[in-house]
Amino acid sequence: VLCHSLTSMGYAASAAINGRNGLDWLAKHPTPSLILLDLMMPEMNGFEFLAALRGRAGGEQVPVVVVTAHDLTPEERDHLSTHVARVFDKEHLDSDALVAEMKRLLAAASAGEG
Image 1 (tube, rainbow, N blue to C red):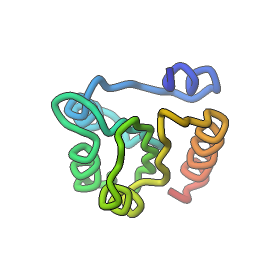
Image 2 (cartoon, rainbow, N blue to C red):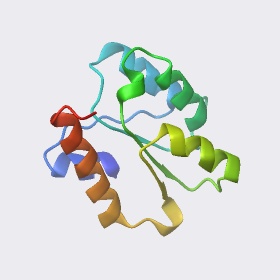
Image 3 (cartoon, rainbow, N blue to C red):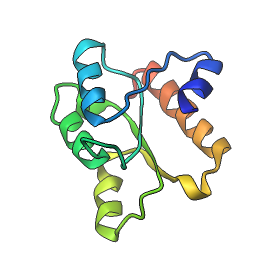
């Protein structure tokens, strides 16, 4: 759904079925301008993916927006606050706010602000 939304707004978007697939995609493509990340994925969860992403050359600069149904602990929220641009709760998702945040981050990336 999110890929379709981005495509309909004129952005190129790709989806990965899990974290390992996402890392494989990153190894074969230019660094993306934005990553939308679900924390609850098979094979490699979002926290593991995020650690691997941030450990890659250029990966520390990619803005990440988390969209999750995972009930976050205070420690997880604290960890994410230093490693991602924003966290959205799927249960109470404000799609307008999500789209606005994606547009803001993509505009900043295209302007060279990271």
